[in-house]
Length: 214
Image (tube, rainbow, N blue to C red; front, side):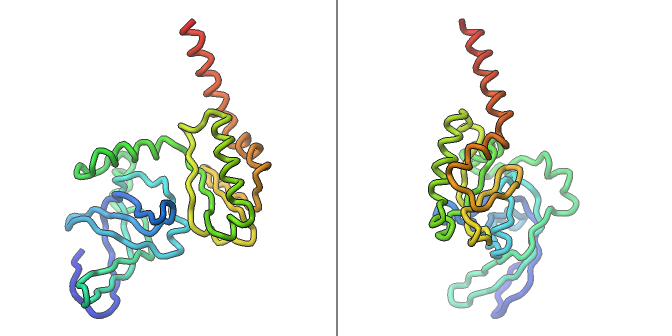
């Protein structure tokens, strides 16, 4: 990609490896870092992409990003804004087995492996969902994970608006099943529906471990 000085918005199309997400305030997805032959670029995601983006995307995946770029002559900065993000053609097979670029710090490699190993429950953190009981839902989810011994297998992640405010609280399970108008007392049944097998496997493993140590 060639980034040049300009005084108006123009289109861009680049290909590169996904390096990491850029998160604001601990849960708001803003953009992503892309590694290309010309260096590392920050690409801001359009609002419709922030809501729909799969946060389980493996580091190192080849992506093609299409959007607009704008040059600010005041500070000499170029802003890239993605309107479409897709798997890069020609790298679809490689993307399945790609490893993160060597220049990434080792701590990021550890985080990437941890994030990949854990299933993720997404919970809307916007004010409308919080007012309708979102805080209680988060607490109930944490308690349910603890009760089932799933803290190391499942993580809870706050997100921005899921565009369903009047039906909040909203959450999305790891298999992308969406739930609306969820309240704390309903969480236990939902967890049993989605994680019963994992809880049973953990119980069996713990029982086996106990037998081998006695």
